Length: 236
Image (cartoon, rainbow, N blue to C red; front, top):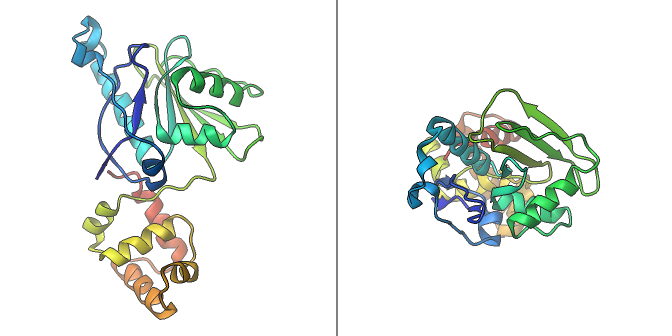
């Protein structure tokens, strides 16, 4: 298990900090983990306000993090106060600086500059990015989700692929270490023969491991297995 790589702007008084589990090898290798003092830890008077929605926000951002989706939490002034490593990576792929809260706020404004975007307080908005330079597609969730006038912006990069937690895979299906590594490579979109070459294994060995994966996960085709792995990626 690894820690969610979640960041917050201490100056903005962000208080939505939680630790959890995720598997995203690229993000973990690319970013160190930071944590800033939360309002609950600092004893602020309003720390107990709207606790159910605060927990809901933590649940939503934790889920986005597990599936490898970037997220930004905005305050009432639509400035970024919390983010994760996937959000930084996604915006950097667009050629933006994305190390600080102010840089992320500027990057988001540039990303949606030519698209009608109204990130209303309490809302969850999905920004789907197709490729660098293309106009993103923005989808909105109905209802009030985030507390205290904040809003959540989920950044979905169609080129980014995240895999399930390897320990979760082993617990659910009883996979061996070799089968788990194969499953993670397949979830990333690699072909079995490509994996065999990179690992210097014979086709027979990879096919044998793949057959075992099919049997243990009760799937019949590679596409079915990859779809299952994608669904499991939301689990801790």
